[in-house]
Amino acid sequence: MTGSIVTGVDFVCVPTSDLAAAREFYSEVLGLTPSSVWQRPGQDALGAEFETGGVTLALLDCAALGIEFSPNNVPIALQVEDVEAARAELESRGVSFAADTIDSGVCHQAFFKDPDGNALDLHHRYAPHGG
Image: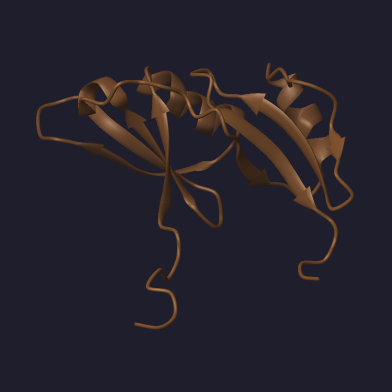
């Protein structure tokens, strides 16, 4: 077989120990659009999905799924048009950032965590891709 067998990324999993609080954070604080909730008939929700415009974030209730909870320590980069404006808005909603905004010479980034301690990153690439 030649070439990639992978055609895209459908979703990225985000572990949670409190699905209700995570759903509130991702919808109310980050303003992401909820797209689905997974649950078995007669049981509490097992997970929920949120759309980012490119990749779905799938919140997983680890305990309900029999998975040991451990937050993601490597950030998920959330694309924004203006990192400083997005950061100011999130700070007004109670989000604390780990450090000053970084200018890497390619992009701006600002790191923070969700209520479960999952690493997230406001990200804006201003340099062209390639080279």
